[in-house]
Each structure stands twice: as structure tokens, then as C-alpha cells.
Amino acid sequence: MGTVAIIGPGAMGCLFGAFLARAGHRVWMIDHHAERVDRLRSTGLAVEQDTDNFQVSVNVTTDPSTFPIQT
Image (cartoon, rainbow, N blue to C red; front, side, top):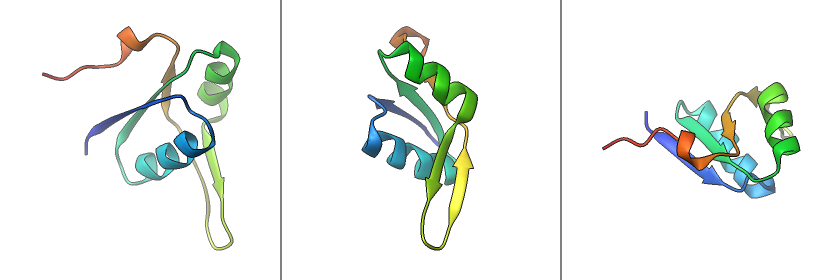
């Protein structure tokens, strides 16, 4: 699977990131809020639906230069 970068893990970014991570993609989130980065690192992303609940871990950083660029 591929690597995906999401810039700005708000509500929609986290939702898409969670589903992409569950599908097997390597997900990186880039955010300028250090507190949110720390929280996502420690708790991951949780999705609660009527029929399915799941939690996934994602890579998250405040420094875009740490994102693994493939050439």
C-alpha cells in the first residue's frame, strides 16, 4: 500500500486518515498544533459508527521535513 500525507488533521482529515490507515496505507498527518500532535501520537484515531467501531495508529508530526518523500 502507499503512503498518504494529510495536512491539517481536522474532523475530515482524521476521518479519511482513519479509513486509509485501516485499509493498510501508511498515513502521515502534518499539523502545526503541538498539543494535537501529541494527543494523536498517544491515542491514535478512533471512529465510532452504528455498525463498526475501530481505532488505528498514524504517524503525526509538526515538521513536514520528517515526512518520508519517495522518489
